[in-house]
Length: 128
Image (cartoon, rainbow, N blue to C red):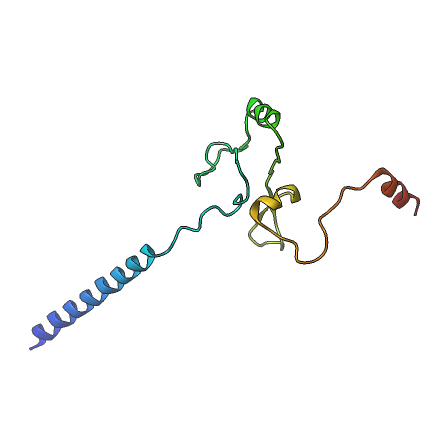
């Protein structure tokens, strides 16, 4: 009797485990690919090798001749990422310049975009 109960229990647990794994795998098949995230509004993106998700060799920069060709063909916006640490001791995240925010589809809900300081405003600020 003990052998029968042990064999039945092993078979039941094995079947449950296989069923759970099958349901988990099947749940991922219906998930659509999210598509581009960071540059979804950009018409063309020029990036160094490794941009497809593989680790890039540091420094990950485009060769000067590529930059010259791209900027000669029209308007180009550099996206120089930089490390950001929000809290001391916490893991870092990545920051991007304001000029490239439009390519990610971000929209201001309040306030205004940053503006460059003009000579007259910087002179007025230094007189105060």
